[in-house]
Structures are given as C-alpha cells and as structure tokens.
Length: 416
Image (cartoon, rainbow, N blue to C red; front, side):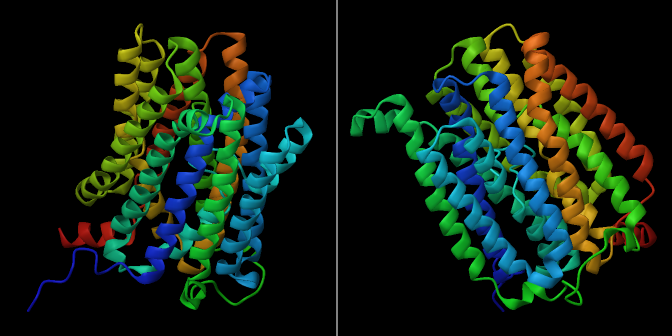
C-alpha cells in the first residue's frame, strides 16, 4: 500500500487559510520595510512615524474586538473577506494622499501597521480559531507551525521585495519617493488576491462558530484563564512592538549607514531563520511541552536583542540580530496551539479575538514608547527596555501556567 504524502492530514480549508496569511504577511512586510523610510522622505519625524504605526495597530485591535463579538452572527468567512478588502482600500488611499490626518485614518481603518505585533490584522484571530478544526488533535501544534512557517516565509520574501524600489527608479525613471509609492499599489493588489482566497473557504469553517448569536466574553466558562493569558500576551506584544521591523530598518540605516538593499537582505535572512525555527519548535514541544518551549527559547532571544543593541560594529549587530531571530519566534506556534488547547472549542474565536485585541492595544503603544525612549535616551534604550520586559513576561507566564497542561500532554504524562 503506497505511503500517504507527508502533509495529507492538512485539509483544504487549512491550506486556504495559510495561503491567505502568506499573501497578507508578504504584503505587510514589504510595506513595513519601506514605510518608515518613505515617511522620512516626506519630512515626518520619528515620533510621527511611530504614531502612524500605532494608529494601524489600534485599528486592528478595534476590528478584532468586533470580530470576537460578531463572528458567530456574521460568519468567519465574511469577516475575513471584509477586513481584507478594507486593507486593500486603505493601501490604495495611501498612494494618493500624504496629509497626516488622512494617513492616520487610513492606517486605522485598514489596520496598516507593518509587522507591529506580528503582522497586525483582524483576520488573524479568526484564522487561529478556525485552524484547530481542520486537523487531528495530535497534529494541532504541527499545523500551527506550518501556518507560522508560511507566514514567516511571506514576511521574509516581503522584506526582500523591499529592494524593488531601486529597480523601479532605474527602469521607470522614477524618483525615490514615487518608487516607494508604487509599493502601495502592489499592496492593494495583493490584498485583493487575499480576499479572493478567503472567499474560497467552505462553510465548514463556520462549523464550530456556535449558535449564531452574539458572544459575551464575560460569560465564557474559561474567562479567568482567558483574561490572564490575554494580559500576559499583551505585555509580550508590547515589548515586540518596541523593536518592530520598520524601526529596525530605520535603526540599521541611521546607526550604521546600511543601504536599503542590504537592510532588505538582512531582514529577509532573519525571517528565513525564524521560519526554520518554527518547525523545530513543534519538534521540541513534543518532547518538553508547549509552555517550556515558549519560555526557554524566548529568554535567550531577549539576551541576543540586548547584544545587538550594544554591538560596536555593523557585522556583529547583524549576527546578534540573526541569532535573536532564530530563537525569537519559537513561541509563536506553541503559544497559539497552547491557547487553543486550554479553552473549549466554542470559546476559541472569542479567546483568539480577546488575545489579539489585548495584544494589539499593547502593540499600538509600542512604537510610540520606543521612539520616545530613542529620542530621550539613545537608540539602544528601546532594545534594552523591550528585552527586560520580555524576560519578565516569560518568567510570569511560567510561574502562573506551569501546571496547566493541554490535553495531549496530560495524556502523555498518564501514559508515561
């Protein structure tokens, strides 16, 4: 009897969800790398750039909160398509305007925040809540790892694509600002493609959505656990948003004088390393557990972030940044798998939405806090503050949840 393909257990809806996220993260990463540099060319200050990014994350948080309340009534597929079309319209709007108040509105309504908070989008909690129903329980962490790998690959390719404006300038005779603006048109087109992918999802993605009514988070049976995790994850995301890709690109450019093409390659390589680490995280988690994998890979990553901030030369800063990138995302598939496992199936959309909303609100504060520290103290201050807070999060998470095991780990302990 022939052996089934390695990923035969992944269902069609799972592939569509992952394809949608891959397209989304590609377009977001592309936009993220050039966005800060584009606004700098227009004459906006570093604090203003941070404010624009914060508006984008705040918009994602608001829409994600609405999705948690309305997903059962409106439907997951409709929300996925609707939110993506809003992002496409906002990206198109950025091509035509540069007035600060209009940019803030477009960033908010389109959830345009680059990679702040891991690629802020109100579609993410709906995706995360839908994925566990598309694979066997024992494959849940593997599925989230694959989901993360595809997302990270999209982010890596998007960072690499950020070098394209230099090609536009020579081939089309554009100035630097206009070549950057072309990216907004590409972003809008990619978002339209993503909406088409989401539109192909079957009705089965609604199967676990519930009764079709409104959801009251305060009445959920696991509300205490959900709100505690939301608070901890929000702290983690705040620290991540302090060292976002847009600001890292700005940092490499201004501190070491590295050109955009080289920055794009540096960030591309860091995302490739992150993608490789995600599958490794699933393998490690199967041996030492989801929570242990989250904590014990995260702390070394924070230490490498501090090392990069104080590196005396560009090559050493790049080396430490790549080591940080390899370890920094191992908690992503394990966190998503753990969170969806320790709540009831009917609570998953609400849980993912509350987590995402809390994380997005925290992330909206990250860029502003980071740029304020940068201006008040030094360029290294945001890296140091972010790392210290992130280590505090890891230790708190472990202390509070080390005895809360997902079903497969409880069964493994009993069987062992």
